[in-house]
Length: 93
Image 1 (tube, rainbow, N blue to C red):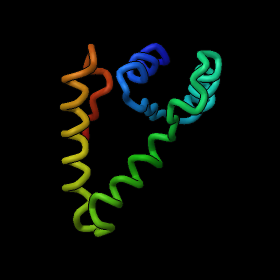
Image 2 (image 1 turned 45 degrees about the vertical axis):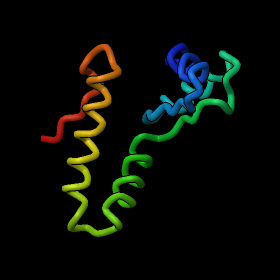
Image 3 (image 1 turned 180 degrees about the vertical axis):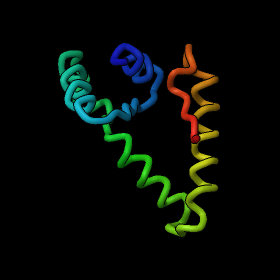
């Protein structure tokens, strides 16, 4: 993951790692070891998704399901285009 972040930085992009639980601590430690502290954003995935869902649905409860579906479809398209495997895809049951 850190290697991929370094490649993104070299390409002029700002890497963002979304993770849960202990992943934030591990991600920050790995970024520090790689000398990338402050150059990679590491955020809690649940808070990131919830915040964006509220914002994109204009804070309207009735619009959240449709907004969530669009968000998941967009995310899965990005994964299909840029990742080597489907394990990061989201499936809403």
